[in-house]
Length: 183
Image 1: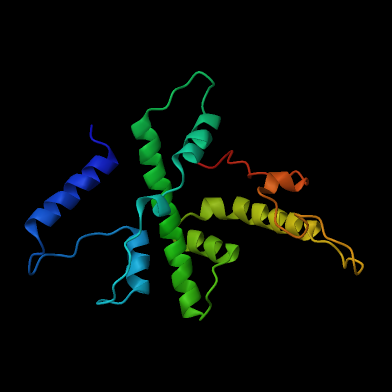
Image 2 (image 1 turned 90 degrees about the horizontal axis):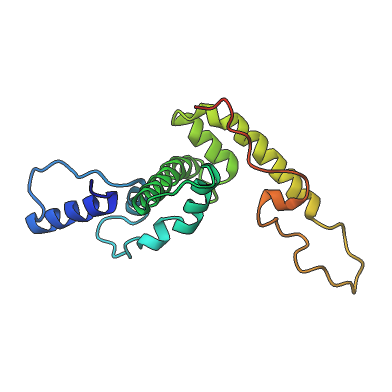
């Protein structure tokens, strides 16, 4: 069975060989490409999104997959790549919907609440409540890390006021919400 990457490359080569056809229906595009198209009107020269900018690092994907499997389980390379593409497409899908909402509201910054709204709008309601709890705990942890006014002349610690690298490292027991009971 061909990997998603091989199939995608084959389709792209075939399309390049045939060239654009008049009256042909528009070809489907990824959410990331749709966002890029929306931000860059026709005729504008823009740099195509590079694969490494579009996908999460494969090592991170592999680590997350490995954490959910038994210790002796092995994961095929094409499985990691397929999940990498799916995760990246999902992120682009949700982000695109949230971005559209922000543009309608004339805002330039997407926040966590916008992403949760997009997930709900797109039918991922089962995940919204656990993620709302996670977001609230994360925001609480970040607020707890911010220092009170420092006396003049005092040098702040290097990571004071910065959000923790992960919510779990915030020291408040904040971690990923349990997905138990979510299909």
